[in-house]
Image 1: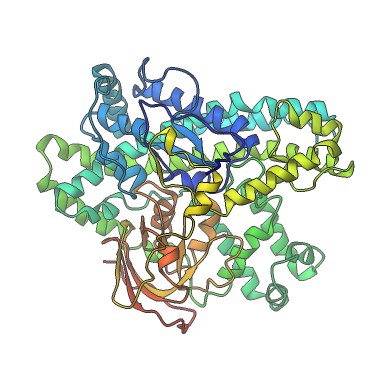
Image 2: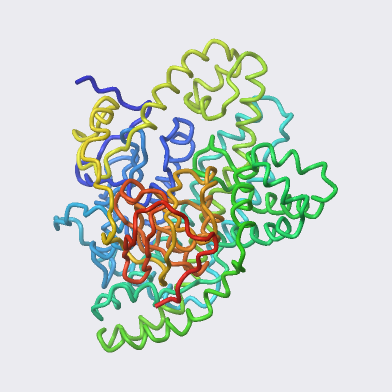
Length: 591
């Protein structure tokens, strides 16, 4: 069979062969463009290694060259290297490869870890121990957060005006990688520490014989940036509910709504608050690490869809109402697990409970700043695309991102028409890759499939549809029990069927999905782990969440009545009739 591979593709390091779509699906859910690979992934790999070097995880002989290993690009999609990320568990004192699997990946049953010479390192263990001791003593915002804000502010200040010459805009784009490398390093530092600290609590729950208690031990961090998007949009949604004119405008649909609202006198307060929201958070959107992607700033209808869903709620969606018992549940969980952990570990469990909120907030804040770094770059790129389109080029930035940055993009800007056939041919290939599901695991270079192999495999071994009485098992992410109609949402910009109280069932989520969490009764995700985005945000909003429910979006039919237990990590099928419940189906009390 012919093997047609993607435009850019890495090579699997034989020492670190196991690669997974787990976790990274939140970051790069779609086919990766050459633009993002060249400017983003290569610098992110370098920043990741910088973070691990600083923490003590990375040792001098771990990698033979600078080729991406931790973040791989295979079969058109991004992958994370399970083999190497397990070294945190191997080299960190008191941790294990299995703990890293549960914290970062959570699903898919990767091949078991097999110890090898060179994996363990006494020097690494000592350096990581110092990192953990310092992290457990955290009593204020970690330094990396403020540093990331300063780096982004400096980067934004250097952005040339959008009427600058092509050469100046290209030079700004070329300056992106070293800046992104620093900010991404900070994100990996905070994420890794959060994973280690949360792992202490997960291990304590496991020692007590109740792994689900980890959801209570971890609790809510408070003021997590990615959860604030939903809360801010909910305040704006209240304006719609209170205004007959705004309600009528939203009833007419969100397509073109942004422009329809601008001249309306009745929408003055709405427009002001929405503009302030876009100023603060407009850099976010679906697939927001992709440098050619849509954002709330350049495609505001994406955020208006979430407001549209929230305005329909007949009850107060304020998270505080659902979080009132969380502290009591956390204290009870602490007392339940402490008798089951070693004497020396009891203090660490208590410290981890206090320190984790700082690191969870830092993880989301540094991630937000890393994405924010790309906001000005996206504006500059879109301006260059706009100029070229006026001279016979292509209007869609995603299609132009199929070109190589260093050689082809400058040539395209000089003579757009000449490369249009090349772009269209590559985009057609991209659409073929986008239509298939890549392998969840790739364990060697020989296993990297071409598009023909993936198309041939598509549709085979389709998962069995659920029937009443089935119980799907996943991982508990956010405590509580909720019943409601399953609403299968594959794209956050197309959530018209999601009504308040429905259960949001999604393949994977990034912060662009966050506003849809608030009206939902609960969240179920195909993939995810203890520190994945869906889990963190669900905790902050006080809604049950179960992740790592394999093929949930395929097995559960839209409209199925289900019960989600976020502590036990189960999804129980109550009945498969698509008849709707009243829109305002409320969550049951948390267990």
